[in-house]
Amino acid sequence: MLQSRALVIALILLLSTTLPEVHSKSIFEKDRRDWLVIPDAIAAYIYETVNKMSPKVGQFLVDAAQTPVVVVTRNFLIRETTKLSILAEQLMEKIKNLWYTRVLGY
Image 1 (cartoon, helix red, strand yellow):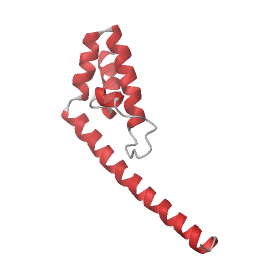
Image 2: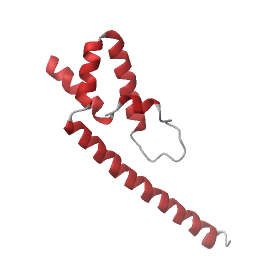
Image 3: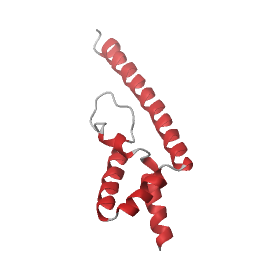
């Protein structure tokens, strides 16, 4: 049972390597391309709640989030979602330009 709880906690923290970093970033920041900010905020909330109840378990969560596998996976996800976000922004610009030039005739 304890192993499954640890696994669930590790998976939750997969998306939050540095917990203090979450508080410095706004979820609704306009130029933000990092799609993982909402899971980071959720993980930070879980960490704060657990840490209030048991600092020992809170430290375990921090240590689990700092493992190389979690850090590499999180960095990969951030890098790839950033690429997708840039491509989506470029596509929206092309659609907007097409709309203005072809449809509206500007």
